[in-house]
Image (cartoon, rainbow, N blue to C red; front, side, top):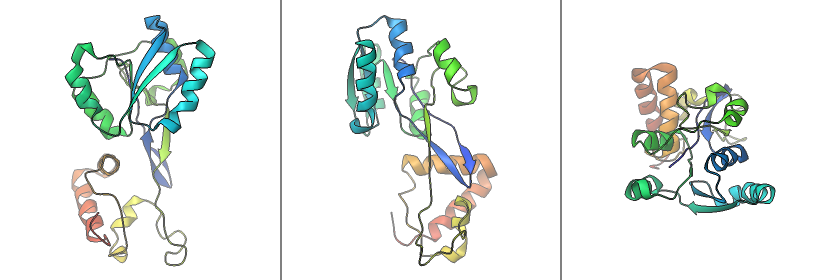
Length: 208
């Protein structure tokens, strides 16, 4: 089992949380090291997002790509397959899933001058077990009619009592919200993050 992706948070009004997309650099680095005629990918990303990259990679290199797509259960599959797993690359979605793979020791390091030269140090693991290829902003969508422009500047503002009964979100156990909470903890500490989370839940318009 080789490598995988993700992580970095940015700050530009709203906090940007991580997501992965296929990189030709990663495929090239792995195939070069293995001298393979095909590469096996386990992906949390959807096929319509990855296929253009896969097609371009195959057209340029002649190397076939075999992909297993799944929204969940890939970590358990890798565990069950063990050393016999055919997977060369795992493409994750969000830092919470990356943490799961790392905690289960399902990632192996990749040593690649190509990856190191093209991906900044703060967007890759120090031990080479994962590389981030893209980030995606997690935004707050508001009504133009009911919410004044600039009334919500960041996620912390969602805990304000003025939004009681006016917020809808995914359930807290979803990987995206777990990553969001992790970023709040990193920024403000556990106690303040817990207070923020409780206040946010109190403002929900309905049960997720």
